[in-house]
Length: 296
Image 1 (cartoon, rainbow, N blue to C red):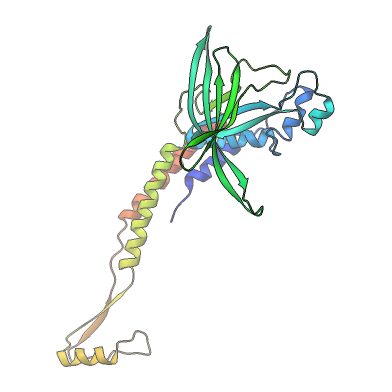
Image 2 (image 1 turned 90 degrees about the horizontal axis):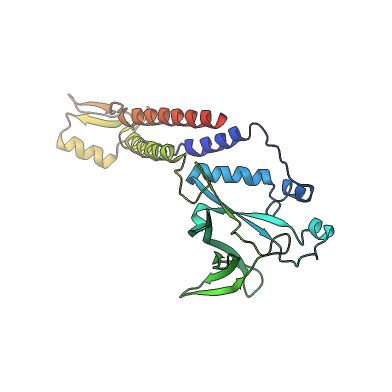
């Protein structure tokens, strides 16, 4: 039996962070992020909760800012309201961020390369189904200091370029001078890989599951009573085997003179159970410390 203390603690920690509801302060033109920050109907609050959950699991996450490809001066308020031209933030798990590099420009260390693994659905030829295709979105800062993107698709034998390099534009219709990708970590928000806050608890949780498997196996193997008989002759033994032995109050065992019978049952072995209880207490202690830290 798997006691999901790690998952429950994760949800409790996310709840502790949002115990006091955050205040959103944005310009009026960005009011829509309160309802939809990624173009898929996810609010900034929901995305924040999801990011915190991923940070608790693996200690790392990534956010990519993007803007519709429009020309400067051609965007109207109606275009922004209908979603034709608006900013959004795409969320990437740590497992999807497969490569990155930085470069020092002046007094700053800027991202010069980020490779993101994406899974997209492609319609099948019959139009009724879909299949998943792996593609890689490559974000670069070229030698001239401009941000470019390109997309590669993973095939059965090789990876081919699906979208040639292009220059994304910001809300002013100008090229970006930085890669608008932000690492988020459990300790800080730089490119280094932080530790998972829930790793220690997950390790104990797996150990608790192993103890549970040992305990359940022992209970199954030796927990059932075992009948026994003694004082039987060979002839009596053969007779019982031929007629069959039945258990229950309506099937008394007829034994020869001097024969005896009874039920054996193993004494309880609590070693595995004690190990489970100790690990459960360790998980409670770790979870209490994490929740106390989050509440601060």
